[in-house]
Structures are given as C-alpha cells and as structure tokens.
Image 1 (cartoon, helix red, strand yellow):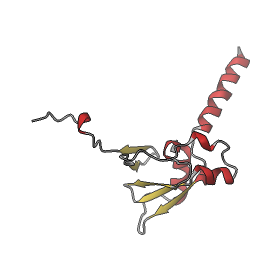
Image 2 (cartoon, rainbow, N blue to C red; image 1 turned 180 degrees about the vertical axis):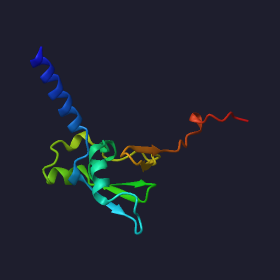
Image 3 (cartoon, one colour; image 1 turned 90 degrees about the horizontal axis):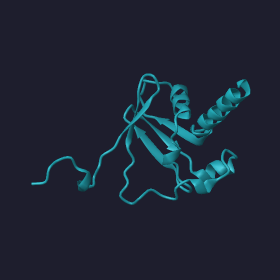
Length: 129
C-alpha cells in the first residue's frame, strides 16, 4: 500500500511540474516606477503557474498584466533550441484571427487572474432589441 501511495505522489508531482512555466522560458519587463513586486517575485509566481497555453511555436507572445509589467513568452522553437522542451508540435502555430489575449492580474499571494472580453454577440447576455 505504501508503495502505491508513493508512486501516486511521484506521478502527481511530475504532472504538476510539467504543467508549470519554466523559469528561463520568458522575459519579464517592468514599467518604470513599478514597485508592487520585485522582478524575482514575479518570475517565481509566473514559473509556478501554467502559461503554456499562450505559448506559440514560432512567435513570442506578450502577456500584459494590469499590475504594470509584461511577460514575454519565448517561442516553443526557442525553448527547443535551449533544450528546455522537446516537442514543439504540441504548441499552437498561431492564435485564431479574432482571438484577443486577456489582460492578466497578479494578486498579493501570487495567483494570476485574467480578464477577457467576449466580442461575439451570440454569447452576449444582453437581450436583443
């Protein structure tokens, strides 16, 4: 029983580690005058989160945080060249033409939230006139 429990814990931890954003896979750009978090804190919080769904195969992606900084995700091909990943094909080649990246927010305990706008009227909760 202890062996099974140990195996389950190891598998769970490896899954969680896989879903994180590697520390050297992004660049943090802080606006002048920003004082809410240090760059090290931001990098630690981002690396503990899963931002991989926003990473593209050939292009860098800039994620804007309303706190006053941006995270630039390096492309999957850049990560492959650096030896951080092996399978580039698991990443999107591009976002859909009408897709708009959400604006993110980092709270005081390191959780990331995102605000996005729905632009397709068929998803509107407002009744038609």
